[in-house]
Length: 434
Ligand code: EPU
Image 1: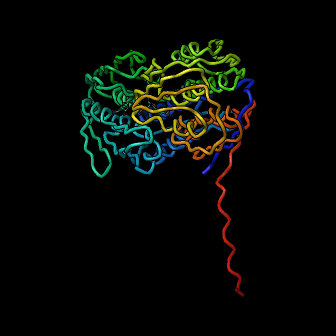
Image 2: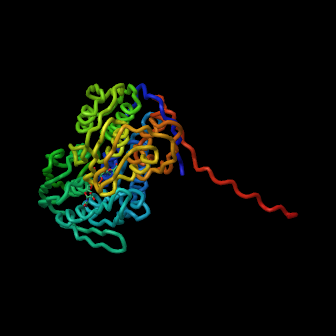
């Protein structure tokens, strides 16, 4: 398993470019299942979860073509024939977002068989709301041997009220409803920019969707969707991670190719903390030359403070003066990074869904373990300001969602390297004479 070795202390200076959003690219790729014509997606990040989705679609019979050279962020997907509309446990267990194929498959093929994802490091993460919504759209659902099987001759429009706001649940049912007969009205929808991006793509494919980005989405179903070309939005979580890196390291960092409008809650909080920010329509400059003050955060659905930024904010809180209370409202177990930061010298107490961070404490070198994607990013951030060399194990988590993070950080002055697993030396074979 690869590890990062990071020597902290360098201020990050220069420009760092943001990649396409993983969490927008995943549903966009699943949307290609809805048509037999090619869907061309630009700005697809080259990360492990995208690779998993390509394998998932290819296993169903989709043709997935990758761009090369300057077009290496383009992916063309053509689902002319879908011989096997199913997602196996082998793939779903490595990426929960595989469940995004459930809605499109049943809408297009009339049948789908998708493994239940099981729990994960950050919480139980059930998909009951996807299932309930599909039932409301007229699908018959059975669950057996760890798989969900859905079938319907044709889905029919319905009134769906989500009991709880769910991002991929909104996306899954949004895709399904595009091919349903009649109108679907979904209430209490997720309002994330990734939902809006998916609706934009679906509308380009011939869907009739109104209201994406608000809590009520109306979809007028159509018989058929067609191919389209679409550019994925910039990754707001990657951008936010680099903003915090600039602030933490007392750097002067320009984050280009991002959309500051998607980062409202974070930028507002950083203003409170005392981080100097300048923004244009597609870039953010962060100047980390003033000391940071503690400020509390509460994670919420968009447009609130994102749970996907909670761990990275915690790294900043360890270096802010005073006490920051961090409340995690979305997932029940998303503080695994806290204990690792404590091993580096942070003062953090976990009380249920709240983490109380007392700063500022110097961070020192340690060997730490990454437990999920965003936790890994937070440990990289902490290591960038730690004294000495930090070794972060299990960085395969970060490869799922951050494109070339070490090259990007090295390009602005970080000392970060990757090492493969160092295997213990094998004992010498006994000699023939012994
Ligand atoms: N929930 C249910 N039932 C459901 C679905 C969700 O109870 O059927 C609960 C979850 O357990 C959780 C809450 O609702 O407590 C919100 O979960 P949501 O469904 O919104 O999460 P998700 O769609 O599985 C996406 C992102 C996550 C991000 C969350 C919250 C993708 C592919 N994943 O997950 O991203 O944390 O929304 O914003 O879009 C990441 O990128 O690191 C990541 C985990």
